[in-house]
Image 1 (tube, rainbow, N blue to C red):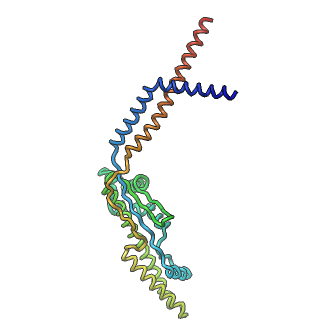
Image 2: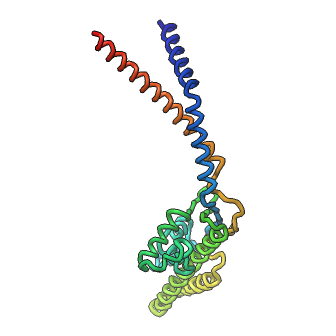
Length: 286
């Protein structure tokens, strides 16, 4: 019984092979047309270049960590160096994208000169959506403790400039927030000096005031304040899209399967019509 089933399966397989051989011209035509169309479309599609940068969040010294513990006990705002999750949140935030678009006037670059005729609110939100969903990506490499920022654009120089703009605005925003928080904390600490008679507490307050001044000075310098740029953005010399070779291979595989399916479907439809015609002839004779 098993040998009979294997024989039947072999017969079915041979039938499929014979069908494909008979339909080889159709299959070949579908594959050739599909691959040729894919190559032409890929060749005519705009070239996309990717610029990228790699940054590493600045580490917090151990003495600073202990100082922050004392500061939190006194109810001070956090002015410590941001960690990776905070930097990623800022990189993906609407406020940073809006600052980049406004500061460097990116709307005409994204949408052309016609963008100036749109409503101001719509322009900014269109730019944010375009930047966030189409050309801008942030990757958190937790294993190595680094953050990768990339921008894809049709102009290689513009892609590198946008990454530079994002890093510049991130630095300005984080340093500005650090200075604001440090200044607020300093004023609050100065108000506590006269309210405390304990020399030990006063000593801690003076140390905290000195720390706030140190944070303000470090934020003013800006460089390497919140993060280090390990790999600065460079103008890419090769496109990443369209990948003509990969697209052609994918088109070949998909079109081959589609062509085989179409050939078998046509054979099935043809045999069904033949059976119906034979059945009608038998009924007519009867």
